[in-house]
Amino acid sequence: MKIRLLLVDDHSLFRLGIHTLLTEQPDMEVIAEADNGRAAVKLAQESCPDVVVMDVSMPNLNGIEATAAILVQCPNTKVVALSMHNEERYVLGMLKAGASAYLLKDSPLQDVVSAIRTVRNGGTFLSPAISGVVLEGIRQPRGQHQGAASQVLTPREREVLQLIAEARTSEEIADQLSLSVKTVYTHRRNIMEKLQARNVADLTKIAIQEGLTTLQRS
Image: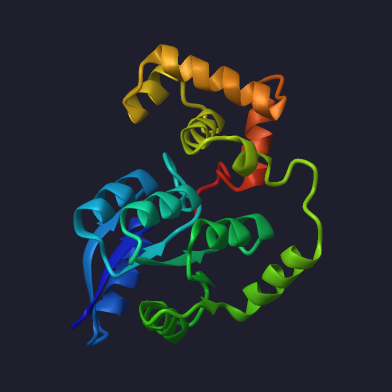
């Protein structure tokens, strides 16, 4: 039986390329694609793929939050993070969310193929350049603000924080998340209180530090 894949990346050309390469593997098939984390969660709930190949930095809902949400609904699904980011906050964020593998986008195709097969069989896989980042993150204490959002905010509040950092208005956030504007205002107030933020600039800085957004999608 072929490994059923969901590809998630906000760059259509990259998705096309990885789709073409992976479908050439005799034991793999791409059953769906998404260009943002929120769409990925919906598609995963509908099909529960064997493996999700997940970008980390995406609009609307980043790969860290999407991974956590998918694994709640589909605990047998495995996630392979495929990103250009090698910073600790992204790597550890994805692994803590439940990803079984983390590779950089410049990894050889064979590494990506090996990672998919490995996680499907219950293993883990890290790019060689990522292994040192993981070890360093384990050895060194986290900074004062690093990890703050993941520790004190609810999943919904982290979604709202990302959208605020992406310059969405409260009305746009309400529409995106199917909430009332009043509820969004409540979330915004709670986020600012929990993170001791004074303004949107503070929230944006924290969101970037936490890896919720880069404001430069890739």
